[in-house]
Length: 157
Image (cartoon, rainbow, N blue to C red; front, side):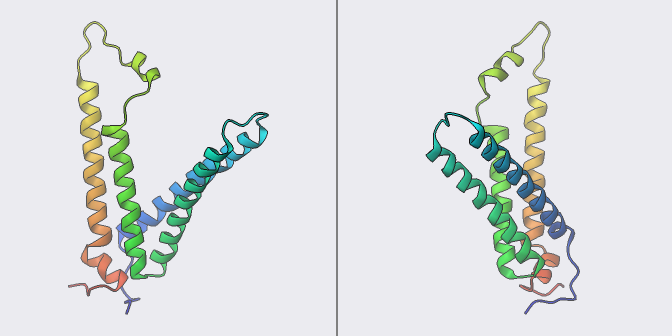
């Protein structure tokens, strides 16, 4: 049974705000891409666009489901929220450490006289700090005593 007297933890509120903003960004992307696809005279690949749109709509649906379930204090909302946070962790790790730079970025990163590697090191450090912050958020959202009390999975000590 969910304890409705438990206050909403900051990690839960932050998750709800971030999920709504990310869902809005995905929705704007789908709308803009759909309008561009509809206006093009010779669409490149309608099937690939359909799969891309379905994937984007699945992300929006998952985020909307998570926000609604978390707002209703359902234990399933905790699980869906943890899946969303794990996806955010994976996206940050992919963009910071795994994804190869595009060819256009290669021109901007050509070494010049007197250039040090401080920019590259700073990028790795900030990426690592972002991953640490997401890991802490993941723990606070899913396994912290206040969050567990909020979702009704364990009493707050």
